Length: 90
Ligand code: SF4
Image 1 (cartoon, rainbow, N blue to C red):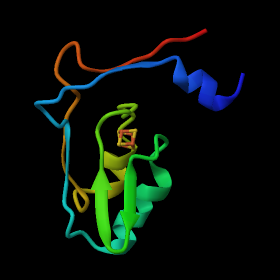
Image 2: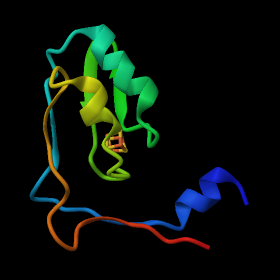
Image 3: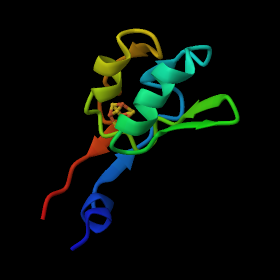
């Protein structure tokens, strides 16, 4: 089973009304690129000087929160109850 197949068995309950991660799109490119490279879900995209981030698919690992040290991630919370990732092993 490939890594993608293993991750593909997880379920995501996306909260359309609440983004549990808020980002500062004006952060310096070097700090942004740290998160682009580190996010295991590949949710940080930086193209032509524009940062985009989608909370759908987040593993809730907290790596971006720690590495950003408040520079790129301006708010990080767990999703509200019943939302977010549902890990499935097997
Ligand atoms: S918490 Fe983890 S998976 Fe979610 S955006 Fe941050 S680094 Fe990516």
